[in-house]
Amino acid sequence: MIDILTLVYIMIFMPLLCGVILTVFKLTPLKIPHYGNFILSLIFSGFVLCISLLLFDYTIAYQGYTLENNYPICVIQNIPVYFGIYADNLTAIFTLILSLIFFVTNIFSYKYLLQNRQGFERFYIYLNFLHFFLLCFYISSNLIQSISFLMTISLAEYLFANFYFQKPQSQINSKKVFEINIFSDFIILIASIAFLYFSTLAPDTISIPTLGYNNINSLGLYSFASLNPIIFTVICVLFIIGALIKSAQFPFSPKINLISNAPNPVFSLIISPAMLSMGVFLLLRLYPLLNLTPAVFEILKIAGIITAILCSFIAAKENNIKSICSWAAVAQTGVAICALGFKMYCASIFYIFCAGVSIILLSYTLDSISYCTGSQENIKFLGGLREKLPISTTAFLIGSISLSGFIFSGFYSRSLVIGGLYNNGNLIYLILILFCSFLTAFYLFRVYFRIFEGDYRGTIEPKKAGKAMNFAIIILAFLCLFFGYIFNKYITGFFELSGYGKNLLSNPFINLFAFIVSALGYYLAYNIYFAKRLHSIRIRPLRRLVSEHFYMDKFIDFIFKDFILFIAKIFNLIERYILNFIYYIPVLITRFISYLTQKTELKNINSQFFAIIFWISLILFTTSILYFRTGVIR
Image (cartoon, rainbow, N blue to C red; front, side, top):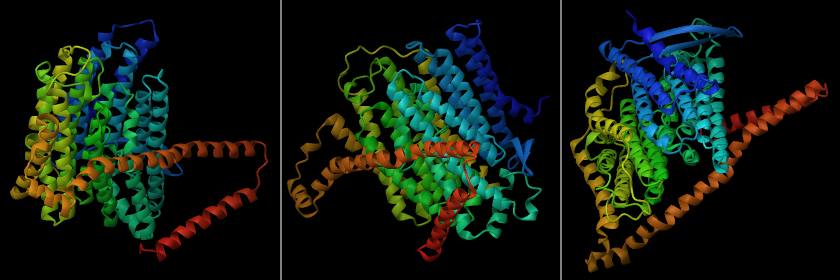
């Protein structure tokens, strides 16, 4: 009988095998029809899903047991490098959701690709290789292995972003996506090397595997004891910055729109928990390390809440389907990161998956609408699709209700977050999270009324979605309905043995208040975009009082006009200066290395040149240390 360890290795390498088979068929005369690529990829992803279910069941049956196996690859400067697996509760959850999303993506993609046969085989090759890289990342046993596969995921994301390589804008955006992803990988790599170096200074760490996740707590304690607290904090901050860039948090949120030229099914995959939450997963893995410096969690709180509010505002003004989905996904990830900043470990994981399932359901539903209406992605030119596309209408309504937190999966996850904030007395953040719920309900039902109600404003008569598309959407709809209820029964005990199962008590009064806040968002969207009778309010004395003494009319105009434009200008400045500078950093590094190589080959370089570089670097480092010692951080 095959043991669970062998099954896990089979699960990892099945997508790789499928990708290799499809590549052989494409590069040799052994051609197979389009549906052959689809069926082969679907079978392999189905097997991976079944094994991930077995792994999840195994972790529930043997609560607290960790499956680990390491194979030494090489030794670099007496430091062993391993390839291995580390399967615990966190791995089982992420792997299950990842496999389910890829299975649904395989089903949904076939009909979408048939309308444009360009790159049919190439799509499924890229998809299976990306599946393999993500599985290896989520099941990695050490930090070095995780970073290696983060870089390969960045490459796969570049290939998909540049899938339609004939488009000049696609080429430009894909290069920017690749550069910013590599920049975040480079930051995480620097932090890992520094952590590895300082954690191995103590003689007791010789027997500990290289940055293994099972020993991350011990390594953190060794390095924390032997390091200056400032240096240790800097290492943790570097990890956080790299993870925030990976998850497209402020000010790197515009990164997510650069991938809009990717095929629609892959775009939905990128904004799903499978990929957008890679940075969050890394922070969860490094939680014992970050917990030694509680001050760094303030960065997560601030970055998460700023991202959630700003992205919700932007989503409320967008008209493009992809832009609305991408900003909504980043906003919900920001809420999860903010919850992690308050050390609500379980609530953060729960929110990621419940909100992520709703997001991918909404995204695939809108993708099917784009397919049925002739690639129409502007909600201004849609409408009246409720009777023509009943399955898509029902699925979108389920996803909107869930993500707004009324009922279904979204209710349970939001209940844990706001309950934890209320019980810990974090009222300011609680108010901001509730405000995000108000905005979420507003822009989701704005999209619903624009697309499904009223009269159809398109120029092409909508056609019916394919059975494969509808089947994929129905799977996600059922998951959105019942995932929160099922997972809520296990979430409390799922992590209690690891010491993270806390802050899971919800408050009925706060839940009721949150429901009312979301209902106000729905009511505002209903009056503006469906009933169109918000102007009919005739309580003139109250309106005059509010307008003259509290300036509420001007405030509302400012929020919905000037403030949105102000935020847009901020993002434009960030993209023009900060992000463009980051894009240029790899080019500068490459040119500098080429310059040094050329000078070395010509033997035209001396020790004085290196001495100048060394002293400049030393002065900058000393200045920064003195600043931290004499400044506000002590």
